Figure 1 (tube, rainbow over the protein chains, first blue to last red):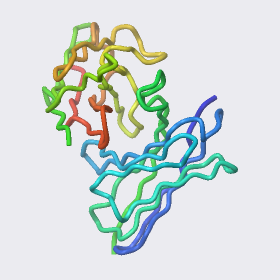
Figure 2: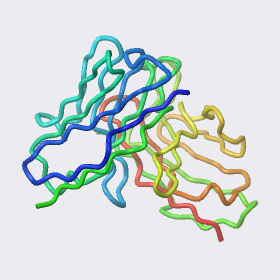
Figure 3: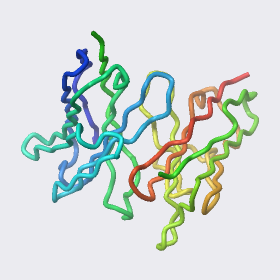
Amino acid sequence: QVQLVQSGAAVKKPGASVKISCEASGYPITSYAMHWVRQAPGQRPEWIGWINAGNDDTRYSQMFQGRVTITRDASANTAYLELSSLTSEDTSVYYCARRGALYGSLYFFGVWGQGTLVTVSS
Amino acid sequence: DIVMTQSPLSLSVTPGEPASISCRSSQSLLHRNGDNYLEWFLQKPGQSPQLLIYWGSHRASGVPDRFSGSGSGTDFTLKISRVEAEDVGVYYCMHALEAPFTFGGGTKVEIK
């Protein structure tokens, strides 16, 4: 069964960094792109970026450029999102979501992680 | 960035009655390959978004056939032919034509 299991909730102080994991099961993580999306309370989801299948290329939203890093460990079948210089505005639920190759036959968000709540508070 | 606009903000529907949600994009989502890169999701309270429709009109695996998507270019519609109690939640459209992907503001569906 294909699923994505994320790490648990985190509480961080302003200025700190957070690293969230997303462990895939049921398929090799390098065979699909992994995207990250966040959702602040009561708000629409917001796309953060992705890591490509196979070649580890990454692409980030300009909103997060310079303080976001998406990586992947094939041996652990896990993807990671790291966000630095946190402020209260980064308080959100963060989701990983699997997507097929660009414009290919599986190019849609078919599988999502359960979400990880990150709270930024002094 | 492409702006996604949904309407209405909320819907209150009697079980068994139809419902319709509109999504408009600030630029065409029609790729040169002929596909519209527009997805519809339902987010139930406390859950992750779940895919209903991809490429504008393709129903995702396991999604009941009472859900249908239509439209092309900049105007899209999600229809529920007969709303059931389990359909409550917030519906979002999202474009996937190019980075950054962006989501509509959401339509909250509740049962009368």
